[in-house]
Length: 328
Image (cartoon, rainbow, N blue to C red):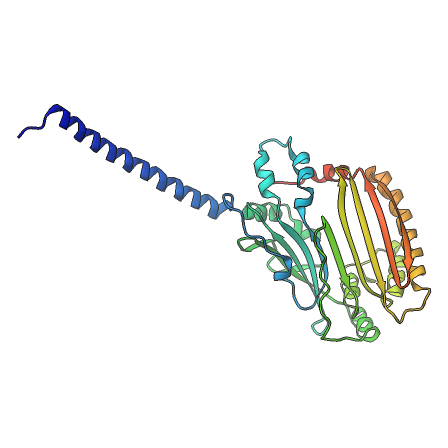
């Protein structure tokens, strides 16, 4: 029995529909594969998980410097808005969740461990390539990086790891001037700030970090007097904390706290305040002359604690200076 024209038409429609469906499925599969390849190569399509620097901190981590870029994301987007070939959505997705610089100290091994941690949001592989091509690791000359560049350990975890040897003089000073205990719980950051730092010097290890970076063998002759002052006060200080937050697009508020140990002489906090005030006077002049930044604030003493509250205006000028060095 022959098919009627109407039935033939319906048959062709069914065949055409199947072909169209097959083509659509192939297109979808192709898009999925392309998306998978793009995401594998650039990590551009999905947000990575939020991961704290505490997950990679070591038991002997004594210095934590942590930045939450999301708290200045609008300022970053504004600074990069006019950059050629950089869509706005890329900037908003490329800003990491968290960045941290961590130092741990092993006095027995005579070395300071250094870890740069970035909790990427997206574009982890691109960030790695950009940082390594810019030679950022070479800026930290005392550090021997292993491997010699930023690596993507896992989705959301970018690491740059290295060590700095501690010289014999610093080791001897640290071993003999402090009581060392394995029971000290680490001092952690408070959180909820644009930038925050904590230096745990309860057993002298924060001093060892500073000495390894800038101590008597690394300080320029003009800094020797400053270094002598640091050594003089180092054994009197148990911890240093500070945090910074944007008050507006061009003003930064900075709060600092220095805790002296309970055995320090009563005049030590006032002596530290005097030293800080002298440094602030020099910094105020340098920031104004070099960058056009206004620096104001004061330091106070409460018992064995030294507190500081400062403001920096026109900080957007600093962002403009580094804008040209940011590459995606």
